[in-house]
Length: 177
Image 1 (cartoon, helix red, strand yellow):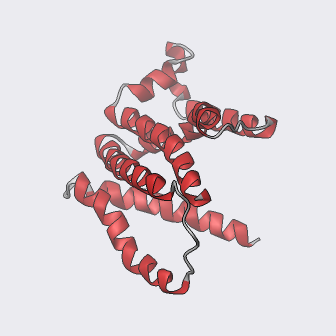
Image 2 (cartoon, rainbow, N blue to C red):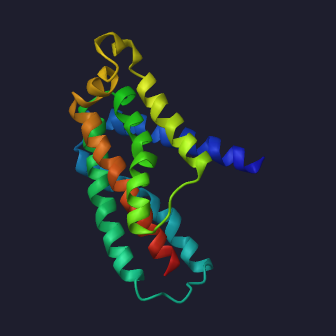
């Protein structure tokens, strides 16, 4: 039952972060907002290092750290630009395409592929994103996807989703090392 509480709180805090970021982006530059997120987290996370034993680091740890950190910074700025460009209701759902992109990056980067239940889950996620713009279906079956791609925000968020499908594996490599 504890997992449910953590899952609910994560969803709540992520949604709150997006709404507050969108509101702040009206008055503050997207680069400042993007950098403020990790900077405000730092005072809470640094003290944890005092109580955590650092394990031996593998040979590819630093490569994963630099690569992941660079991609994270680039992607966070894109995330904020996407939020600034379009409505949250059509921009944030583009993140649901990350598992679809993982179908491409996982076999290439780590040699993994989901089982049947994972594929069903990905299908349901993409279908849900499609249904967000089902009112455009009268213009053709692919009209909901075209409607999402007409605006800059959803396009940028698709790039974010693709980058996350890569950074997930870079982070895994870092954790393994």
